[in-house]
Image 1 (cartoon, helix red, strand yellow):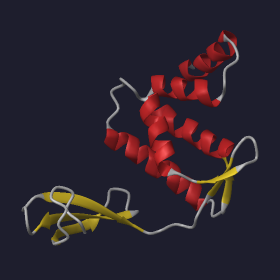
Image 2: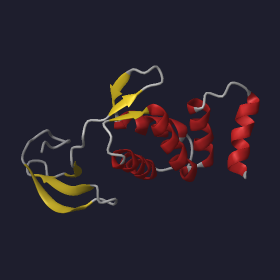
Image 3: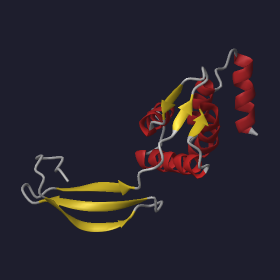
Length: 149
């Protein structure tokens, strides 16, 4: 494993344990050259998953797009990156447990809507406004009423 600080390839594992959700192995490593420590995660490579977009085009599933979408929804909200990562892990677990090679983006959006509701109310409304493509204020207010009840 290459050191992220000095770039040397001589690093060693000093601690290994399961990650919080048991879907990966967390390894603490130390560089033999500069002595700095860093963390890596080892995950099982999953079946390639294709996302079917609204226009029926297909593209490979991209975890980073999901993370960035949640970060944008949680912008200037008291939500830590750890909570966002945990939320993305839950979403991915649900998606991969469906054991399908292709999934509609609308299904992913529904799962995200369900999970983000518990993360932060404002983030939920932000995500919903983009995902549901509100056409007017009334549809937006209907969504707000749902979370207030």
